[in-house]
Image (cartoon, rainbow, N blue to C red):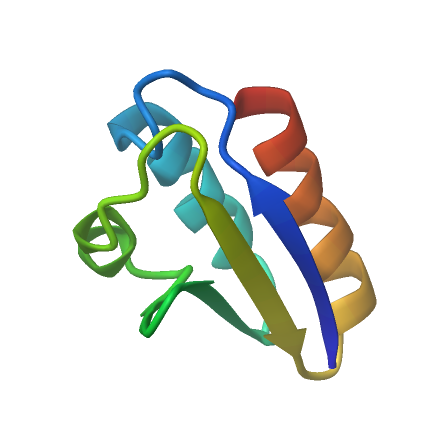
Length: 85
């Protein structure tokens, strides 16, 4: 399993456009990708779950990736967070 933590820097938090990019990217991989905020977690391949986390600017999330292509999936998702959020 690969994981990383990230503090959201975008003033709007995780909003629709970057969330959609995260979902599209996550769906390219067979690995399971979970995004966690406190006690809540969401499947990164499901837009509504990701939006339901309600992540605001300054909040920390943890992304956990496990599966066959976890190395590539983790790198791709982390790149999106760093570039867009």
